[in-house]
Length: 314
Figure 1 (tube, rainbow, N blue to C red):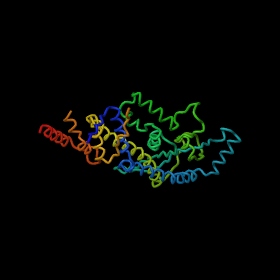
Figure 2: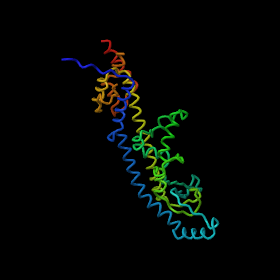
Figure 3: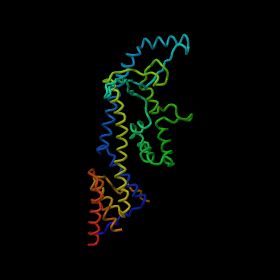
Figure 4: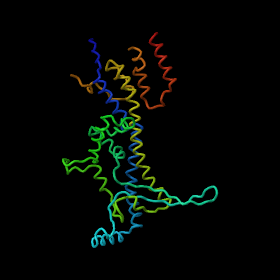
């Protein structure tokens, strides 16, 4: 029986293999992705309720009759008739009193800025999957921004992502395409009495109402945090994987690793046209490093290394 020739790996093939593993780590069933989708579902649900909640709060303090009165005055007297603005951001103020150890009272307040528009970092988190489907990199900030923003790739990627989101436009853009930013800007707006500066028109609320508003902002921040955790989770695994793949010479070694992790890896994904390192990053050991379990301590890694060294000698 003729032996099948082993397929030798090169840099391009290792990259193709790494991409398959990354897709596996980012699959919907992975722990971090489950948390991300749950956070997104929670935000979407809260957003629908919050629209109704905020409208009631605003209209209680600024009845639509008062808005129409200002509109009539503006139509008659122009800008001197008053200020009206259709907005999707609102500042709510909770006043309270504290008492110090000596019994002195002090008046203070907290504010909660509720925005229904699409923030930049939030947009990257919310549209993560959509952007990846367009071959964009919504992870660019976590990949480069936290360390060195002067990396040319950071700015190139930022520009591409912001153009897709709708933060950067030009006269040559297809006007029939509604960007996510434009869609969110028009999704929920209320006519309010005052200027276009949110902080100039604050709505007073009690403590319980303030907590509800804060929960909505927390849900938004949680989605951004889940996005960051996805990147950190996957990048940690990919660093180990890339290091291990460098020591693999043949495809069957990568295939063995894939089988141990349940990754669907076939030769079709490839673009056809030292013993100690191999031991440390053998399919068995690398699979252990990439599994979702507690990270090995420094002492455990040293012990594994020495054990593999003894095996290599014997």
